[in-house]
Image 1 (cartoon, one colour):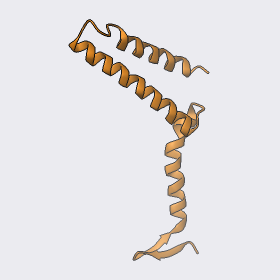
Image 2: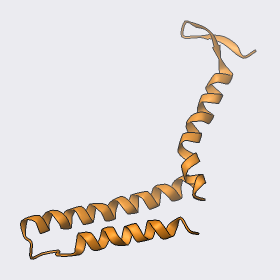
Image 3: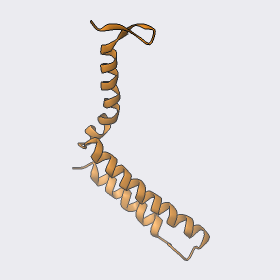
Image 4: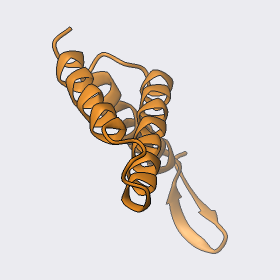
Length: 91
C-alpha cells in the first residue's frame, strides 16, 4: 500500500517522498557530474576558489585606500583564477 493518511492529509503517497528525495539529490549532483567531479570534490574546489576571490577582494580594498600596496595582487589572482578555470574544462 503506497497511500496513507499522514498528519491529517489523506492519501499521502510514500513513493512521492522517495521521488522528491531523488530530485533534490539530483540538484546537488548534476552539475558536478557534468564536469566529472563528485559533489564533495566540487564543493572543495568552489570553496578554495571563493577563498582566493576573497583574498583578491581584500587586496583590492586595501589598494583602494593605500594605492602603493598590492598594486597588482588582485588582478594577478583574478587572472590566475580565470586561466585555471579555462584550462580546467579542457581535461
